[in-house]
Length: 398
Image (tube, rainbow, N blue to C red; front, side, top):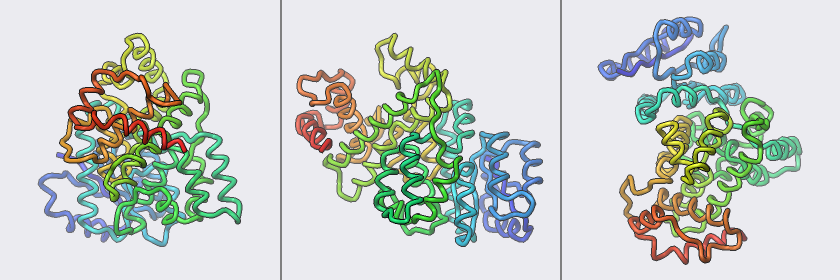
């Protein structure tokens, strides 16, 4: 039985949540804490799968509480409740909360958010990885991108589309902006997968608050074990894949989702490089020694790969399901059924073609496919289309 903790400084609010979720009492063990100190005591007494906290509380507010929970009980998924008038306050919770829900909270929204978080936790087989991912409040952004963004938001003449272009160059910034935009806090009627629209919805003031909050956009500090150029190469590959995905024959209504999924498909690698540098170096060494792919070495050493880790993180952050699915299966798209050239197929193909361009910048002519990729493309029904897909990949560089 999943254990859920609800935290508020008003007993009437907690009573209301208890009544609202009365029908769920047989599937969830729900506990209620009056304020931050009581919540920490409850966590000390027993672990919780999900913690839902109000933002504005006297003494210890929600951001402070969830920060302490992240550090001491990283297994717990963390949700913040905040009113629409508290935008500046809510951005303080960006580094410590996985999801943001509007207050007063819609019962169905609260139920589905908790359900999704519990499902994601069940899918993450390794408790150690889940705990390590749980400590993460932010991913490192490249220092050059961060500097450009900071300068842009401080310049009164900067246009919002110029800010969007800067953010699109950085995986970590892109994921964080999409996380906040897709939260119920902003009350949008549909999920957002276009970064330019996400930046427009957030507005310059919120972007500025994020940029100036050092914890929200942490700058990558070179590590002697994982030099900065490794993270830069991950981002360059991601940008190539996103550009290629935008050119592929995906249904028009899915194009933004496929593009952003391609941009974020290796976010799990960025997580490993920044949060588990020794393990990441061991993975790269194993792949080099064995002559195998990175995700195969990850499976041997971790029991999972950067694809599943990235999908877990993005799922916790509330990135749209289709994008999360595409990230999770971008090395094994045949694990799920396909009726057309959908987002998952697009990300797999974009990743493959971006890899070819990494090796042969002038084009893939004469490039030999690995047998596993050939079999996968054939199973997906796109092997015969590969020459024209490679031409689209070349066009994406323009």
